[in-house]
Amino acid sequence: MTDHDAVPGAPAAGPAPAPTEHPAVPQATATTPVPPPAPAGAGHVSFTPSHELRSALAGVRAEVGKAVVGQDAAVSGLLIALLCRGHVLLEGVPGVAKTLLVRALSASLRLDTKRVQFTPDLMPGDVTGSLVYDARTAEFSFREGPVFTNLLLADEINRTPPKTQASLLEAMEERQVSVDGVPRPLPDPFLVIATQNPVEYEGTYPLPEAQLDRFLLKLTLPLPERDQEIEVLARHAAGFDPRDLAAAGVRPAADPALLARARAEVRQVQVSREVLGYATDVCRATRVAPSLSLGVSPRGTTNLLATARAWAWLSGRGFVTPDDVKALAHPTLRHRVQLRAEAELEGVTTESVIDTVLGSVPVPR
Ligand SMILES: Nc1ncnc2c1ncn2[C@@H]1O[C@H](COP(=O)(O)OP(=O)(O)OP(=O)(O)O)[C@@H](O)[C@H]1O
Ligand SMILES: [Mg+2]
Image (tube, rainbow, N blue to C red; front, side):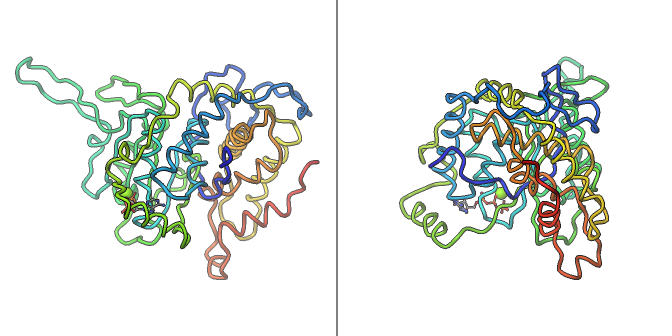
């Protein structure tokens, strides 16, 4: 198995890759998608991603594979999100291993994970935590909500009303929770994986575009191929218990410290002025695409650059190519654009519009 064989062609939309520690990265303005001081025309660069770090992440992939059959693209997407400090929307019908994937990922990276089922009656405090009164000390103390974790699986985020959605989205953006005026930082890494069921819209509260834009990627988990489904059954027949990942042999292959080192390397990945121009043109083209009523925001442009860099690094390169941008265009952009109703009736899809854009924007050589 190669380091990463599957392009994360499914996910999209994420919150900007969060403030990085890199002083040279102008994260503050969405209109300057410029990464570290990349010399214009870079491409022949001395930096090579470290073999040690990349093989540890390949190990994570192998560990996840002990529990989850296939879904390689989603695994790639989740690794990219961890490298970019971005959040992920995960779409898939029930029973395609969304929960299993998140649990296996956290076990193979020594990350803490929690799950919240977003129901119509869930309150903001059920997510972030709240002040509770201690009768013995006669004082209020803060009881942390499930958001205080590394990997938060926010199941069926669109089943909860906007107020509770907003409390999660605020925590995602600020990486802290403020209760009673006191800010409490969330752990690092902190990644929200929010699931949505693509077929059920009854009684849901779809996330507004402004909130979708905060997700780095939107990944989709397809139904397995026949051979993969047989393999799932074979594992079950051999005694696989999805509740006991340790028994399935899933072991940590990396940890948060290693992840932090990998992130630091991703920030050194060079991007030429030409490739910056290409990523920008792809995003700008969505704003004038006739089938779209909403194109990609400048935050989306910066996110595309971030995911393409992480992908270049995972691919063992110290520089970004136009193909990296293409590879990440679908998962990074698909949730940030909106189809016109007429186009939808004609059978146009978000994916087909992104393909058209990728086919029409001139690729620098
Ligand atoms: N690709 C797969 N690899 C391994 N097991 C799988 C796969 N797809 C489904 N399964 C099996 O299906 C079970 C259900 O998976 P899981 O609970 O993770 O689904 P889910 O997508 O989270 O569903 P829901 O939307 O209902 O929460 C798993 O425990 C596993 O046994
Ligand atoms: Mg689940």
